[in-house]
Length: 344
Image (cartoon, rainbow, N blue to C red; front, top):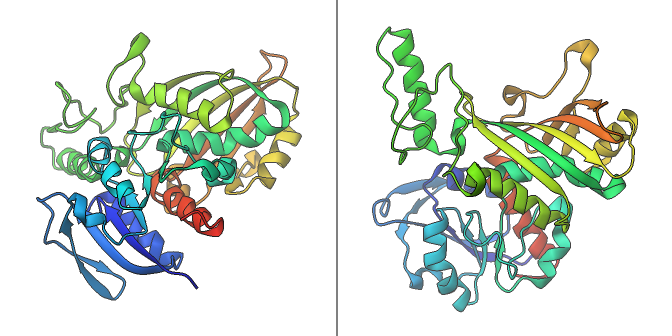
């Protein structure tokens, strides 16, 4: 079996750590592994299975003699080092927003548009986690009846911000239980001008505000979905909300199709779709929830029902672990598909 020299940029972050675990779980064909990070994290020791790996400070030379690099460190870092890696013959799979809407860069969810890997030029983008979870439900319906319009409302876990947000919500729980004032430092984001309590609260503000009063997160869902599905005619509008949940994003999808589809047909189509679990038994109170989907690789779909206000409409409730399928797992699946197609 062919094995590969692999580098992980952002190996010490929450998603980078998840990525390492998934590579081990799936027995990814690694010949050698480099853990790369900023100077601040250089020298840290990571336990990789039974071995210990010293984190190296990333430089352009870090990518010499590397076949495949996973970039898990954010858009600024990706823009700084992607070209250096490509120049050294490395295939880069980037988890940041840096290159997603570049027309020269494939934006990939392997279950949906793996054929787009055929035109990569050394750089592949991983979609936004909320987009990935949504398109896993939307793509099968689009293939059968065509999407006309989608209204998305998200309920996003704090781990979407990072490890610091998980720690902050936990600390707020402790402060509440101990009867202390709640000290908010992270939400809606660490760099925001104002911070709000997350415990017992919802914050309709994810990423910076942008065009038309929408946030960048909301525009990502619009534009990335259209790119992945190869259809700019799909009308999409989104509202993204942070909720006091540690892990797994939830989404309400209101879908208008070009052709009518019964609830039974929708359920059958989704049950046959790869990477999806239909969990929808109202008599037994069975529907997707974050606690059920955490650490699960599938996107769970339930509350499938007709929207009676339009000629061909459906409502879906979709939940997925955004650190796994929304980020780290999807990145590994892209790499596996590249190897399968001999594109590394």
